[in-house]
Image (spheres, helix red, strand yellow):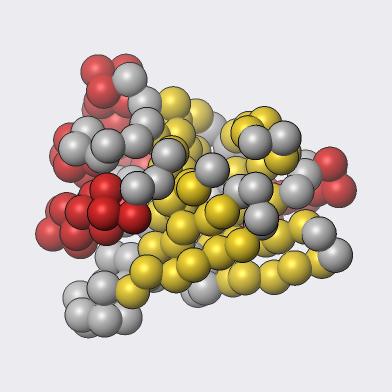
Amino acid sequence: MKIGIVSDTHNNLKNCSKIVELFNSAGVDRVIHTGDITQAKTLEVFAHLDAPLWGVFGNNDIGERDSLSNAVEFYGFEIIDPPLTLHWAEKRVVVVHDPLELAAVNTVEYDVILHGHTHRQTIEYDGDQLTFNPGECAGQMAGLNAIGVLDLVEIRTEILNF
């Protein structure tokens, strides 16, 4: 199972369109947004994904929460306050926005830990457990933006730069 991972889109609609294109080309089965969507227009762009979208709200989503929640419902997405826990492909996944939110989570119960917030790429293995943040995707510098594809069966990541 291939999962697209994106974080901190911050309403950069041009980059969001490219992200949709990249995930659709990669043939991901599902997409997870680790927060800081920022505005409902971003979700309108993500409605063009060929895969369903799950995720969590981030600290920059607070001011637009009503419009974001309405868009989540309208498009049939699953986006909640962190933590989001998923059980896919016999793996347990936890999703937060800020890695500090992991203090309230018993992380040993999970195979994969996903977060955003830092805008820094994190790919860390602790035994069989992966902590992953694909990094910056809302920047203006072409080639320095990144999203991730996670092979959930193999617990292996790929970074897609654009």
